[in-house]
Image 1 (spheres, one colour):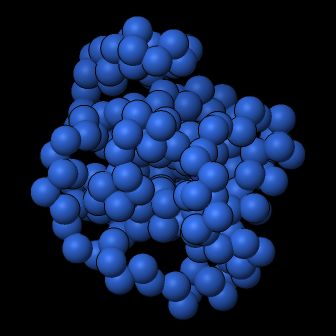
Image 2 (cartoon, rainbow, N blue to C red):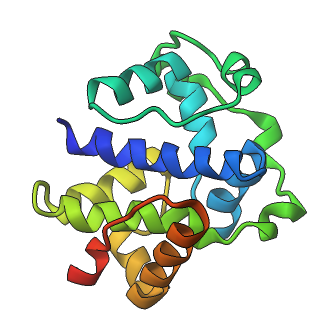
Length: 177
């Protein structure tokens, strides 16, 4: 299994969980772009990659495919060329910040990803995970400096809160980081 693909899948899962909690993709992407300073949001990248490729990747990794509303699945590009698409694709409507980006706790988006990154350091160098976040999402910070800024206690508290609210189990790897 490619650990960077697993890392990417965790971002997509976080976003889809928020979709299933009633938020829209533009708002979720806005949290990453305007509250964390990323140049790309989760759903922008999902659309660039091609949603069929994203879910095909989930299956090849042996991961459960999260439920996504059918109308949303149908709205995405399919079989899109990742390299050509990534360089040429800009979703202009997602460049406008939305006031409702403050309705989402930003830790709900990033905590599961930081948690997974803390586990993945057994298999990949932390610098590689940092580089991935900077390259794919255009983040100014790597995942671990972001974790330090947020605070490990805040991340663990968020994971525990989400477990109580959703039943999703996250092993708190960050406690070992």
